[in-house]
View 1 (cartoon, rainbow, N blue to C red):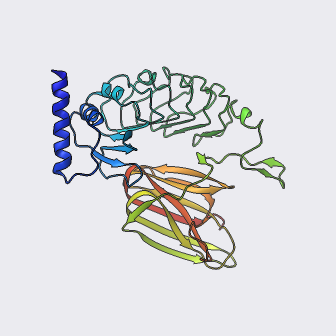
View 2: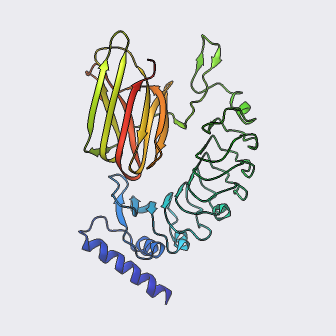
View 3: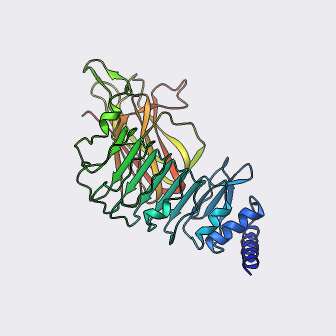
Length: 364
């Protein structure tokens, strides 16, 4: 009986796909599993080497293998066990009601999805975990995830980090929009080098481990100190990835000489993938310090800002604008274009709409 239901769901899904004009034809076992996973809700299939399709439900194939899914409909999480190549899962507003069969996952994002932390105990391959508005009031029950390198907790009424176990590979921890008023409850983490907790200024004991090794950002010889990590998550480099915009507007006022001044408003009606937003500041050789504000009306948008040879980044969601300070970077396509600079924006887990970036010079 169950096999007949699965086959029916798969046929229903495939009929919907071809009725909408086709696209990538998924392997039948993966199509069946996804149909069971969503309860037959329409899912757009795509090749991860191309553009992500719009809409809340999509499944990405690499070399014919299903490696990533984003959903806002979840009928039967047990179907994840039938997807051994799945590496990235994003749930937004889905109804998660029990443990996740997630042994293969490397990246998990839960937004507006109530979660009990013990349901993640099987996610032993996770490298990054984002929980935003997951209904968490405590971290007790947080599983020991041996490979977790990045943990982001956002907009839950967490008051203490006491429940977080030692995570041997954790290097970045972000806690925003919580009721946390102290980092004192954070137990030592051997590799934790970057903590983002707006409004909290005291240093936890875990930061001492980060100072034992040379800073990846070099040394300020004038002050005689290693350059500290930025106040935001960071990456070594931002690749030149394909992306696109629609409805792009740019309005900038620049005084490049003397007392340098910059005011720039950039707007994007729809953002897909990663794109540079270019700003011409004239024939100055400076790389000006700026303050950037990022907001978005729909979806999640990320902005990358140079920081001593690497890139820090911030993410905005609807109603939650973010700010970041840095140095306006040389454009990817700056060869022969004197005075061409940029910041880089990226739509995360699907298209972003109503993206706005404001740039002003940091030193008045």
